[in-house]
Length: 173
Image (cartoon, rainbow, N blue to C red; front, top):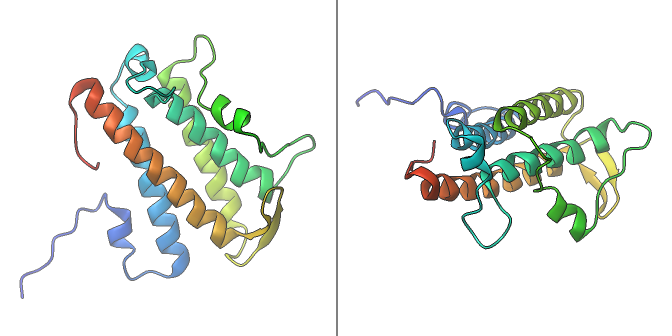
């Protein structure tokens, strides 16, 4: 039988025989990296350009996912005084809005920092760790991880389409 060649950048494939934690971490980090790769190499104007009827832009996706990371990890696993978990449709829509003068590099850096903080916090707890969530009651870290994989993967797909509409670049990674 021929030796199987695996692209080492595909962490989910490398974790194919790992434990549950390794698989969840690998898939979440993989989709986080896709979002960043889809935004990299664009100008600030290209990343903020609206290409679909909604307010979704590549820059807006980075902004949104940065806030989502903060909502599901620090706000729930290590809340600071004054942290409020946003629950309204207005909060959700506003999470895509860019501040005046915000650059793609700033947004990518903020997202990378938020992801690093999320990784750090998640590593402190077992997957069965349960926390209160304002809309759902109690959720486990396992549930948060699966939700974040779904949320990030969905927006990675949006980013893929927006990048293709921007400059024709295609490909999952």
